[in-house]
Length: 423
Ligand SMILES: Nc1ncnc2c1ncn2[C@@H]1O[C@H](COP(=O)(O)OP(=O)(O)OP(=O)(O)O)[C@@H](O)[C@H]1O
Ligand SMILES: [Mg+2]
Image (cartoon, rainbow, N blue to C red; front, side, top):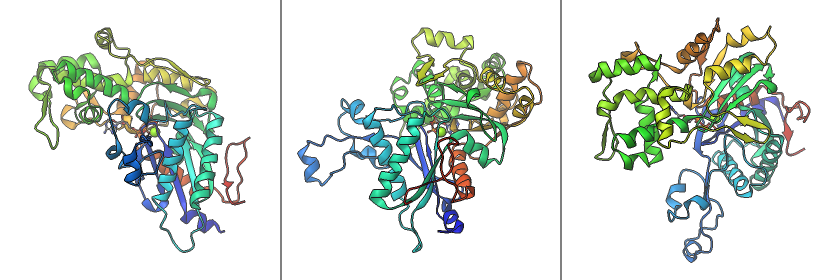
């Protein structure tokens, strides 16, 4: 099997908490994605047997059409990851991971006549414990055994994939998805002892958006997660400085007034005199400690909490600037300026743009991080946002798999190389 073959059949997988992103090199810039979840239907039901449904777990785009009663949802609809981690003994969760992995590979099963299996690069959270690596390898063995679609597999940490996609050997990657945020300094390899993980991501911005909608009299909408998320992405703004932005939005009411029409329905959300709250949504991602949020916590809004998963503590309330500084300062002093010099943002939660008409008070994610760091006395900061932040991990998987020589064998000491499933 040649190097050329390996390049042709490079396949990437990014296991995100909310989305599993997957696909072969031929897709180009964008992977396919499905929600990282599985539904366990009531198999005892006669109707299921009559309709010829034999699967134990349902995953993929059509999952919603299988849902049954609301009461059973919590026990039957399984989201296998929390902050990028699957519990070791959570059998149902691992079943879901196995099913989505098979789903991803089978989706690209019609390939050339020379096809003898993909070279798969899977990306996991930078804090994923070793047992996750072992399980993921085992799952690929199983999927290959059933389908014959995998030749070899390798695993890399998500921030490293991002650095590779940017050809940045020395940098700090901030990967912020739906559930959590990883801050990972890289000097050729991730500096493990300096990684900071936050128990905060896009889902927390959804929570405050939901509260804002509730306060504005849209209690029903506030309960529908997917709609809240859409509204958040459409109306949220990141303030340069929160106080000033709020003052300006209250003073210049017409300009910041926001309405949002829900496509395909008769519903229009109008935030009216509360339109200034748009700035709270953006600020919350970067600094939930601002006193503006206290009144929300007092009324019962869930606070991002410190959480221990395995050995790692995920910090809840730490502001993002502070977190970056803490991470950088765990690295050698000589390296520190080089890290501040190349901060790469990735993940959907840092995709925020600043609409030009609000440029006096609103900024994009990169500028916000620069401001947070400058306020704390850091100089020489260069921040860049990945062109397609949601897909940069997957793209990194492809670049890595393409470049990693096919005869380079996996070792547990280095945690790199190919595991040849047919060896
Ligand atoms: N344009 C946007 N503006 C603001 N937020 C956005 C935008 N696009 C996506 N998001 C948010 O990004 C989050 C999803 O990001 P991403 O796909 O990187 O997460 P994930 O990889 O599934 O999860 P994780 O990395 O936490 O395991 C969601 O909360 C979504 O609402
Ligand atoms: Mg992710």
